Image (tube, rainbow, N blue to C red; front, side):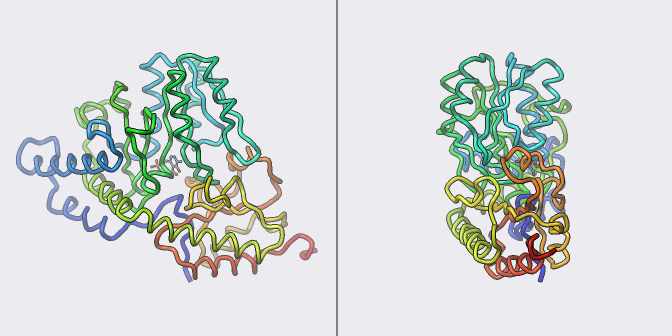
Length: 381
Ligand code: PLP
């Protein structure tokens, strides 16, 4: 049996997405910047896709800019805001994705002051501390992720948006893991920047977008041609853009159905694990359905000499899961997120992340294999 439980790293492409992309790989190959009919046809497809994405976000098409993915979108939002809006101070957290964390660290070397908001033992943001940081620092950019890719913790982005409004701070949220899994109403959320990456919701890899609220005027991060209304140079990834819009449309068309199905898998896994493995726990708040991504369950296994081999052994059993971040799939070494939690670092950690394609049988199989592999320290002497 082959089981894929690493959907926070990337998802399988939806066949309908692939079908939508195909004509733009084969027939409609024109350069969208060309003014002849081959080019115009492709330009129309890009603008139709932009409108589709904007409509789903309750945003204007002029607020959506296609990028090569989440990393580029995060970099663009943070770097351009700092350089162009007189930002002197960034508030972030120690458990952001490296696309944010490393960007912020590089800005610190150029003299930008960085404050890390306090987190509780489970990695949840201390909102009072956030407010006190906002109060005492003008010209601030807040960059806090909506959903953590490793432990699934959700941020109250409505609340943070309101705080940022009150203290006139810019707010960027890395929404890569929540985009197209939850609705984001850009007219209601007080967000300056949000981010999407198609491969996290059954679209193609190498394509994403940056939402820039119309009140923000920033210049390009990637300089070149006049593509993306002068905001991002480089010939557009046309079939990627078409695929992203299609994937997002499919996700929104039955979001509640997918959510119910996936929540069912997660709940089932929590219950099975609790009844099968003594001393099982969960990292972050990933077992709290109201405060975590329904797609992620980060399991905390009691200390064991063979914990380093857990992922490898699951892999041998045909189960793909992850120990660390999405982008270092397959490795449980050195997770900067787990290191920030108040947990016994001798315990094993496995992130199972689900999609609409997973089944209850797969959950049963994974728990069974984990129970077989897992030998508590006391019994392995
Ligand atoms: N932000 C988060 C929270 C992610 O999980 C990822 C990917 O794992 C990224 C950003 C980077 O996105 P991309 O792979 O599209 O560059």
